[in-house]
Length: 397
Ligand code: SF4
Image (cartoon, rainbow, N blue to C red):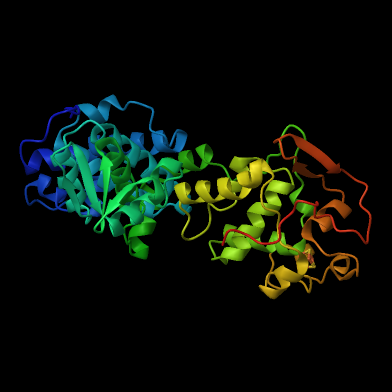
């Protein structure tokens, strides 16, 4: 169905046809439930599957949803709804949760293209159906409960959405209509990022039926590769100290990493010369990975102090947070990570960057004007800290 930008849906069915992710949109099927097996196998639903596959692949290619999906626009409400449901089921069975999150970002942006053009009444209707309290104001602005504003605005990294810059009063935040649409985009993303629960046999069925699609996604979203900047060349993860390698392993395995660990990893990668996308990629396996929040936080860490960035904490600090792994990690998959590391027991070693530099890694820093300065490509001096003079040992959280 082509989006009727600028006009309010006439009835509930029209609303669900536009926003098939809304609770209650299953009513588009007219009370005829569709089983997962039918959706995966029945020839009657091939069109929904075809459009669903196109949506997933478009998101894998470009989570900014800049691609126009003519087939989706031309589809009727039932097919639109079923294609979304198909995607949710397939992505819940995907080996990597990162695929679902990426698709959710793309679908939320797709919905934003309509939300940004509709009247306030429609925004309010969608918001309320998603569980957020919103009110249209006579001056064409929109008010949100303060608690809802905070829930939606935190992942948005643009400074204009910070609470300090808003019109706040009596527990409400009043924003322009276009900002309300952007906030609702986050609500949609949050809703679609939650995987639908699947039983093991259903997951196996999905993986079998859609193996080709899942393979295509994996090819489009390969595992992150560490990329350095032009001034450092490739960074060398095999030379990272045990603590940093352990943090990376934890995230890759989908395990939780403490706030202090997440901060230390981003700050270390930044100083080791990793580019912005490489640092963001390092967090994709985190169970609570949120693209917007991660980008905001990495930006905060790397842009601090005019581009100098926060420095990773010293070894003593990491040790006090239980993040030092110098005694080895017996459960590590690679034998090289299991024994104690003698370099970490050298008296002069006080900083993870010092370890990396001593091993031959290239450590860089930005100067106050934002230019990169190569401090010590290879001439490590044991007994002196590799932490540059401007390195900070504490993080934003
Ligand atoms: S001694 Fe320092 S560099 Fe080595 S694992 Fe511990 S915190 Fe990391």
